[in-house]
Image 1: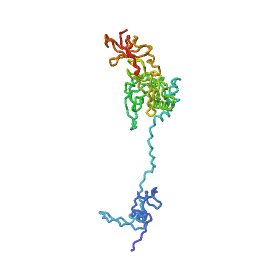
Image 2 (image 1 turned 60 degrees about the vertical axis):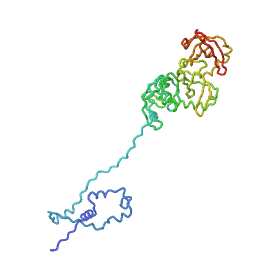
Image 3 (image 1 turned 45 degrees about the vertical axis):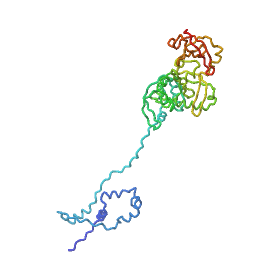
Length: 405
């Protein structure tokens, strides 16, 4: 009896073609999803043109099947075998494709000035009195426009602050002395690093002796919530020096100016004149001898001075305070002729000599008479001296102490 020829359905041919081409159920679904990286020819983007010749065309015969031996397997009847070929391949559910959110760049930290401009000043200053509001407005204006403020140092405190390294730019935590200025209610601190220019730093004891001095400063940081500010004296000094250098009438030789006393020691006095920090000795301050400058000058005083010289290139200024007055040596020979006896006070001792101040400000360098010794006289004692001679070159008077008065 001839065998009945059966025709396989189209689904079997398609499935067989997929299996022969190496496409499984997973690859069928993947092939149905368009690939954005594929080109219009159906090949991945960037694939060279020669790669198309290596692809298997639709009518290429399938590769030979592997020869395997099934142990203990029985052949299925033709009807069951045909039904197995009609079973469609299983489809695997792919997870829904979601578009990845772009990574957000980390927000940059705000600078001090940006944080300052973001403040709500109407809310912060709502409950202030008139004096407090004026004080804060002055601080705001100095911080915004770098304008200088003037205040008196009321104390010097050791504080731990963050200082920016000028070479590396990193913030270093340091403990240093800070000058404290309180115009009305707000504490303004000026670190020692902001008091002096580079290369002109002073010892800590100089800053500690500046209590009571009047200085100019520029606000460089405002902490409105905490109620304090940080300022810089050297920035204000730069502005003062620039103003002074561009005014010929101010720095010509012989011009009169004003200087402020910052710190006073036994032998030296630190003053500030148009942003220039100048050390003055007793010879620059008075014609008369002064045993201790601390008895005659105090921080916060303002003195008249004369400009002696000015070097704009090096910003070097020389001044003299005593030359604002006439030299008492002029006409002293008429007032105190040689051989005359005068009352005077002992102002100081140096190298065996005794400086005596006459009532008109003239200084007489004296020695003791043979019946007295140094232990018999102390600084501040009143004595009787005899004028012996004049030295016009040194502009000095010499005499001898006769007795204590």
